[in-house]
Length: 312
Image (tube, rainbow, N blue to C red; front, side, top):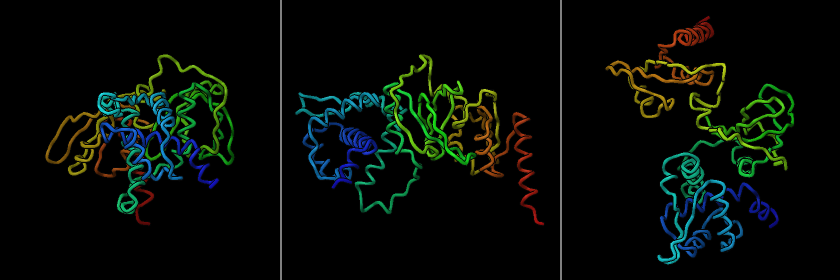
């Protein structure tokens, strides 16, 4: 019983309850509190098969609005039914859209026990474990004490950061934060965090900070100031071009030329390490056309691979 209570009271479980509540109201359009309570009885998150207290419900409403800017209103003229006031904002993207499309689906799968073996999806290492304290620290403008060990170090080290934003990329969660010790913004992978705690030290987010703008010219999480953004052109050979067309590599993607043999796409992007690795992962289906220095860099890597793989 004690273990159940600890799980129920954990911040991770609380975060899941917020997502569950948003998902239920969003999918129903309008719903009474009694209906919410009935669905709560069937939820896998309800470890003790308890009712959903009305006071807890209203506390969750307030926390959801504060953390995610999702407003749950009550239509008293329609039988006291609850609905999401800013549904349009949620459907336009951003954190609200992510919340629904990622965690809500996960909750639905957990509640559909008979379908668990028939719905396969990618898992994100250690993401959910640290998301809640990071989001709470961002909300309250408090710094975090983090114990971290990167891939190139044999030991971990503890330091303080000011969390600016979080981002998911290639199955990993990252927190972008200001390090007062190094006096610069750095990116930390959540799966490399050993321990994390919220401090009582406040910080002020720069008024001109914009996370989307910060990564606008980046492919993933590398936003190297020493690498300027420029126009990159690639030739994608047939069959593979359909995948690139329907799932763009970057928001700046433009289709420059389309022939029966290939399609040429252009990007305004920083040709960073992670973008280079993405292009190389497509093998001979993609050819870099410009800039020339980037084409030569790719060619050099391919030649090195050839030397390593050719028959002895």
